[in-house]
Length: 156
Image (cartoon, rainbow, N blue to C red; front, side):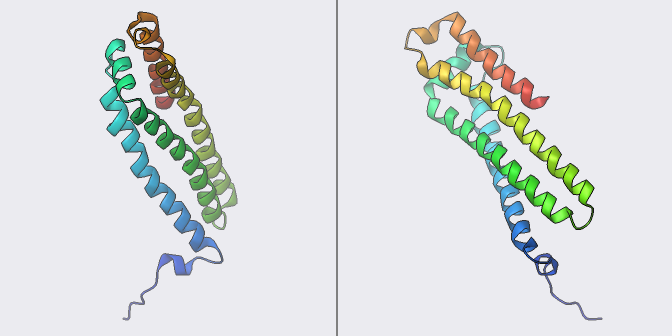
């Protein structure tokens, strides 16, 4: 028995090897960016049940907080690329299922992007505040509420 060496990509018809590569690259990039943003940045800056510390941490590392937002935004965009890739790759097998998988992925990306608006709000509140305004209770409560709204929206 002889085993032929062939790759999956070489067995895919037409442009599908390029689509498979783009989809795989997008998934890999998402797997790097999302943990960086969530665990490398947000989990280090956000102190649960302490709005003052959270606001202070975000103010001290505003650039890093904004980088996490951009990373999450890229993840949402890549999710649409992955949805397209899944649709193209699954369409020859079952077009209805391919459409369903792609549509659900796009809906998820849209909901995630909508949740990101709350992080944009938190960053804007901190960026627009002056030194003494960062110490105000109402501002800290707004920042904490925006961060909590993102967390709730994303987990939903």
